[in-house]
Length: 437
Image (tube, rainbow, N blue to C red; front, side, top):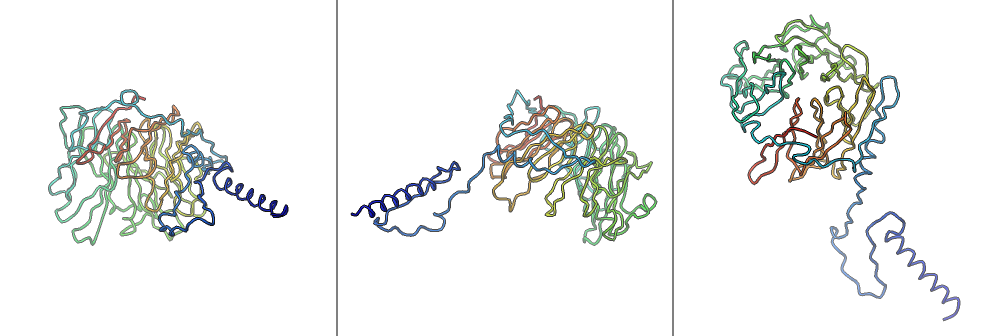
């Protein structure tokens, strides 16, 4: 071999070594190694397509959460950026039974679904028995926490029941305040040809009144109030604040005006007040009532009902932007597909937590966060047959916990009692716990 040929061979060999090192991960960005074979090795059959797939590289969890809150796009009403305190992945605390929460073995019987407690400690619950002659509605009532619970159904004597040819349906959760509870019903004729809604409320003694009905002449409240089928599209979504019920009515619109308005009445249905227009579902903190104001191409903002704007939400043309989910004491609770944020509108503070990465987002939609008096809770990450991971946050303390194991749904009520469904050999069993963390 000549000197030129020998030099050429050495250079070619060096290039092959360098190429192999680069492909095997010596660039500092680890990737699966590349397997090579020499030219004189016996050929092997071409593998099936599924054998050639290389698993997608997944960034570290901390990097995923940090990226989720890096560009939230939230701004205060004056246009300045909201810069939240960020809870990092490594700072999420595994919740420990007996240290952060205490299980309540006999909190509620299996037939009861609790919503929240009034000021006297009585819980508003839904019974699994049906009310005969009332559109097949399940009964609502009061119950104490403990092993000797007695279900006390609400007094519905002042409410005209649905007829047997109507199908009643609660359109949302029951909102519980210190002095009462409220909920909405949508019901249809048996043939589905017509539908209506009404808002009902129960006082501390359990007496129920009809607060509002879709068929009222709402033009006496707002001149642009919708009527007929146009009035039926709005979910009233009532909430209780003190002795008043706030709910939504639809406004007649040509596509350019305000779609809805918020109205309030007392628990018995009197003393009507127009609280604001161009708004979404009302959300009550300990200090005020807030809602979303939709402004077309100008985006959406959070406003204090009867007051000024608080937050400017980022514009998302694909419809997956940030939404106002509820409240945690004086904090507003917002979430998107990427993050959960608690904002203190008066003190101009915020805390954010990125959601865990979900590889397959085609059939996945992250649900909203739930708020109580002190805590927030939400699903974190993908849904599997074994359940989903859930996080709990105390925004005032700036702490986030991870509930143990994978769970089949988590419920958080107004008193910060947690409930979750744990998988068993037959069906998920409900566990209730008081948070002590």
